[in-house]
Length: 106
Image (cartoon, rainbow, N blue to C red; front, side):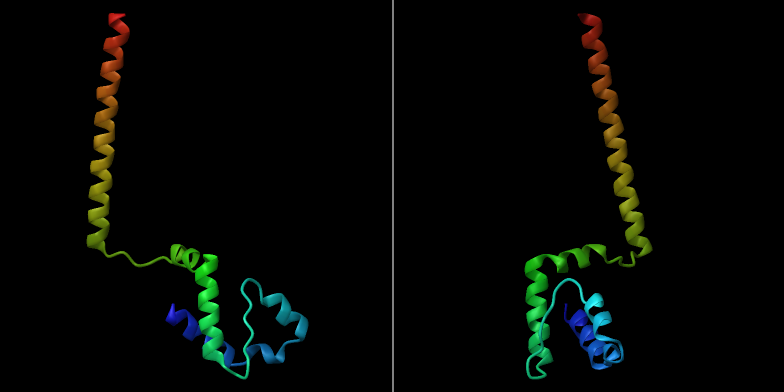
């Protein structure tokens, strides 16, 4: 989360929004709003972090992040998925055989 806060603070330090009209600023600021008092950016970032955690936005951001998966991890995941699929198919075959026996015996 600190990296997000640092990148946001760098974004606001560049004062990109200062050249835009006031209405454009209002349209771009959606979601969580935090006021900076007396130039205390660190305090505002801490408040924003607390608001993000309590509202669940932080969880959504973490879910949406796509991390690089190493090839060895991909192989392990593929092997686990294969085993899961084979077990499921085996169980389906056994259940089908049981159902056929019950239908034929009745």
